[in-house]
Length: 229
Image: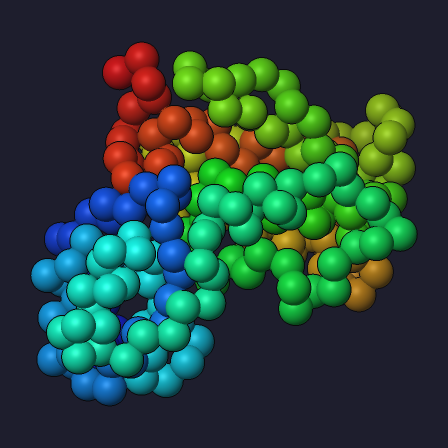
């Protein structure tokens, strides 16, 4: 896939994702060369980063998946119903039953709103002593706005310096929308391992609003603006 990197970057700019989560599958598609990868531009798919050589992971409707198969692509569906997959995992966090790291939502692609919710649930379940998640309001279309707090005594308001990061004000700036999730992961996984991270968490109260504008960050209609325009 490395030889396809330049093509991928171009497609990411020129081909907007048009997949709705309501009827979405996630699949690996065999793309052994740049020509096979370029041909994906003819289909309404949302391309995700793939860790497997010569395979491209993408999200698409079942109809599009069938069209890819009919056109000769080798396809392996790994999530049959993305909406159902996300809904099944959205349950109150249980610290005694935290998912192992390999089963959590990976930050190797742009997260949907549903995947982001699952990611935060998993982080809270895995690191309940240093991370909390609360809903501080709803978007115009009723999506939750999350506030993540990370600190050594996360349930207390300590007399420590506080810092807040907010992300995804412009919903179509996808890299910036992912940054908050990377910061959360860096702080939680580094705590107790990396002395610098441990000092930051022990000596500060860190607040993160990972998705200020979830309405503008929908894969079927990315927008700089929220639902009020």
